[in-house]
Image (cartoon, rainbow, N blue to C red):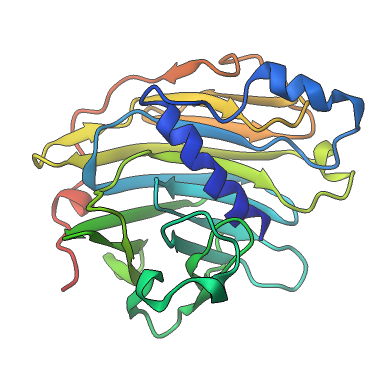
Length: 296
């Protein structure tokens, strides 16, 4: 799955925010300009926040098209978001966690090094993946709608050299968090860090660069290791090496939100690529977050 592979590469993006090597530069992107791109450029927001135990983010998708992935809550060991397959295929929510290492064949990973499944909702499908990295993945059929707000939460619990990562979606009808899945993986004792969101076109048919995808990400928070809530008011706008500039990002009109878009009639007119976007800070996290109690 292209979205999964692309998310793996964003670990480099997340680490770059701490001063390490960067995912891609304008110079690298220019090298591919000889060939006409067959996909819209993948664009990302790298959230600036310390290590933590909870990562909360919201999304409002404004425009989508077939085979688009919207990552809402990505981090150094996995990612969580919404996918649009188009046609008769159901839309889904996806939560995935990587095995340690850089291998591509899931069957070649020793059982002791594989992601463990600790819990799954009865409606969630789980399995293993490979290609660029290996690990555990989960799918929930989720008929998300254009213009609606969806709330995502990742909880991390360090257990010695491993970390258990749990994915939750907020159920507005029931006014409660829905625990989708918990995976545990070898991390060396890592909590949450390296936070990001992105939009990716994985149709790649030559026509898709002319189709626009737009989403807003907002009201994001991280609970740090001391239990303090950190407002995600800054994000670095980055892109993959695809040599297209019909992209944009920046603070959204609604307070507390950023927008991100790629493809179609987009122009980089708000925040310059590779620069940091900033919005006004929020006074406090929402009650559904401060009252959250992890599932046992």
